[in-house]
Image 1 (cartoon, helix red, strand yellow):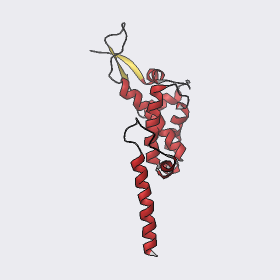
Image 2 (cartoon, one colour):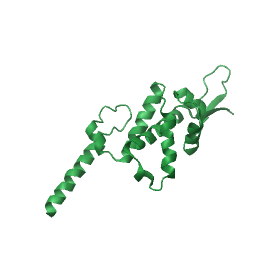
Image 3 (cartoon, helix red, strand yellow):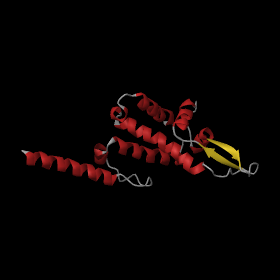
Image 4 (cartoon, helix red, strand yellow):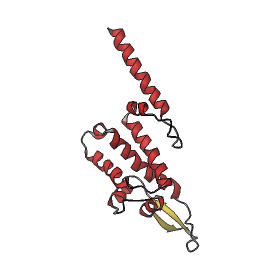
Length: 159
């Protein structure tokens, strides 16, 4: 009986290792994630996958899911059980919100403003809880990367 239980646990553990291998290290190729591997991913891995999706989508097109995705972070903070109460969809949405914020921060923070009238300016961007609060307080729903930049980054003089 013990041998059967140990075999079963090893069998299940090997499937979870396979799912971790299928999760891409970089966000450039999400085609390796299959339907079967999505079943085996844990919530932390769903958040990481969501970060990849959020960053990729905000770079290429307008998205209308940002307020809903960022609201999941606030709901998770107020939950007594924390990450244990998350569904896979909610974990994915949290990752997507974080991915959008990180993509804009990575792209624009401390970059020079490309404008003829403001050659001596650069962007200073925020992230973290303050960025999430700003995203939630925005009345805009359909946003692209420049819209998010306007919310999270301000232009400052270079000294």
